[in-house]
Image (cartoon, rainbow, N blue to C red; front, side):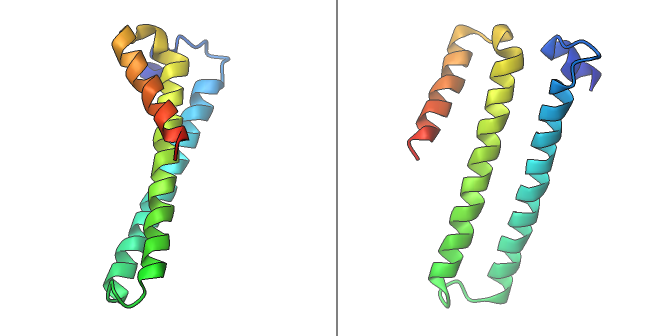
Length: 102
């Protein structure tokens, strides 16, 4: 956590960096669980037996991952955006704007 605090410039009393990292950690754990479910679904059924179900599983997993990545990018912009080059910052902002489109 000390490295994150240095990047964020947070004081020891600032709980926001730890809170955001906690959210990211929980999102990653949820995504790992969803990936395991997806792998299990592939192992239990033939992919063409239930294409709608498989499609829903894939969409749900992809949507969850996209939200996790968006949250990570917002966290980087909020706490370390001032350390990024203008081009790097623009890439993150553009990526976030693009993800709004669906």
